[in-house]
Length: 229
Ligand SMILES: [Mg+2]
Image (cartoon, rainbow, N blue to C red; front, side):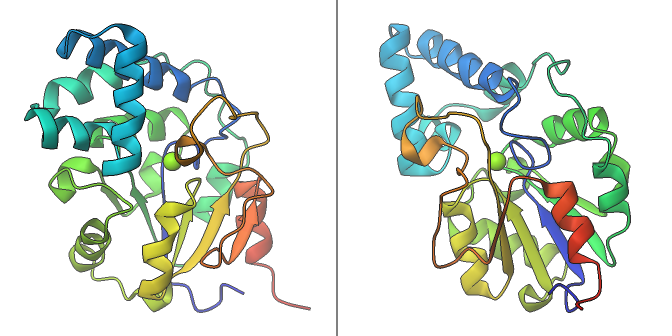
């Protein structure tokens, strides 16, 4: 089912590691603290703005830049300065990615530095042929169309020969209509405390632009390379 694929594109957070990990919540909380201080708001009000901007602009950062003219650098450094120890690297991930035929990429709405920190911690960073962070797309995040177009232009990728892995359903819609295959990486954890658009997908999530669903990325990659019976 992936024999035509020559380019493998991975989101980072809650995709290359499980959304079950108590890791991303650190970033989430640091965003609230930053916004609370930056806009002089009570934490609950800051959190509402954080989630509203995430829904409307694709990331909280984009909303802060668009509405308040915020400089992104300080925000990114602050929110991505997190403890990596809750992230337990999946022992099979390195072999699964290393064995993929073709080129491999990370395409994240986080920063380049965050991708490097997390990718190195997971023991897979050196396997990627390219890494695109939010700085590389002029801070215009997925799911808007322009970052996907720029990504494919820069790395000279034919979407019809590419596959994209994401924990966010909405971030797979544009790639599907560009011609990519799509894989939704789901979490078994309870994310119901988050607004629907801010949750990693659950196993029951479906959308017409999702080709495959898995809660085991390494296992899925391994199986996809087996010849069809
Ligand atoms: Mg993600």
